[in-house]
Length: 120
Image 1 (cartoon, rainbow, N blue to C red):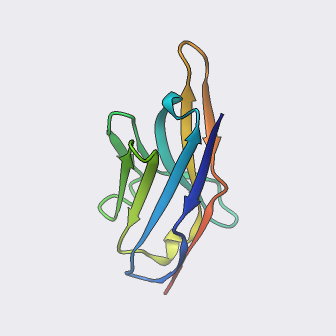
Image 2: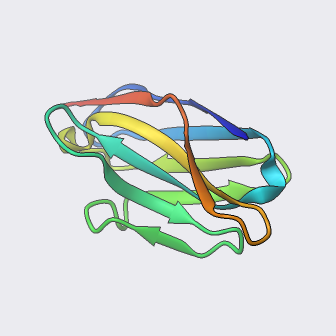
Image 3: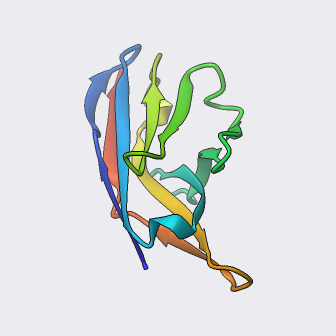
């Protein structure tokens, strides 16, 4: 089992910045890829960014150049630095972690989410 707790959301004006944090606990040695997804009202949850255990990253086109994902393995925490925020970035942001033990299946865990609201 892996538990994920997000923090850092809030209300910010357009053009501003926020940093989200996601702390993992539990069977952390099994965690492979971690990432951030978001879901706006009336829309499907979408990928924002991923980072592998080796540090490789992936970003949605809509956030490239504005968001940066990072991972501190010593603190079992993944961060999402968001800059140049736009009203369309407003959403509930969820942290996720993919866990795999030996040859077992990959299990995806989710945090409870944190609200990001960008005012125009």
